[in-house]
Length: 221
Image (cartoon, rainbow, N blue to C red; front, side, top):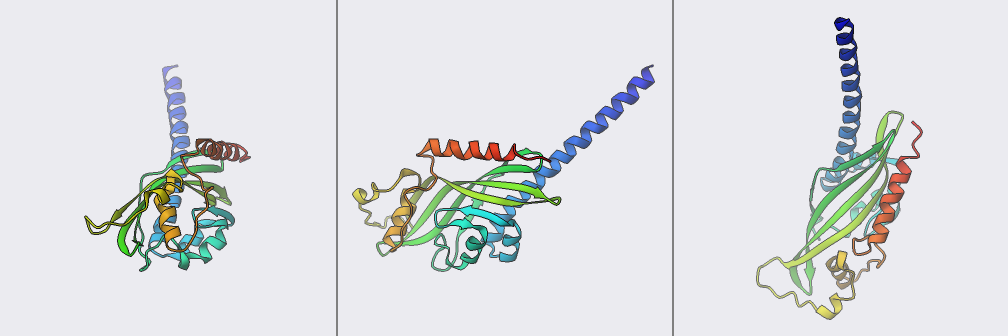
């Protein structure tokens, strides 16, 4: 009797371990996918970057909205980059929410780039949260959608003590979650939408998470 119970417990433990391993394997694969997407972009590994996305994927950032192919084809004109093309990115471990063959991952990142502000050298640092919607098709996880949420940013002179001559009244025209990014972009002759995702509009962020949860729970396998 005790031997049968022991065998049944051993089978149950083995089955549970197998299920846990399968789930961990998915989490690891998804985590690797989204972090490799960022690292591929930073290292200019464009073939690797493109391979992270499905052909029908979509991307929304501060400078582009539309198909992933358009995002990838504009890689040489990324406004985030400095004049020399350098952009430093640091990211934290992603948080993965998975249901069957769909998941979304939250990846906190910090980007730093050198920019010119009113003729002076400065450092622009942006704090963002990337929301990746990923899907497993034919056994392979890839990105189906990418959304960028602006959290905060800072602007400092590259050389300590240098006055950047920032007009505070002009600065107040821009939203708090990406104020300095917008300021720098406009001063450089460009533009930035006032309707980007940012934590200063929490109802819009709630909608992003609601849609992501709804999307993953539509998974049928």
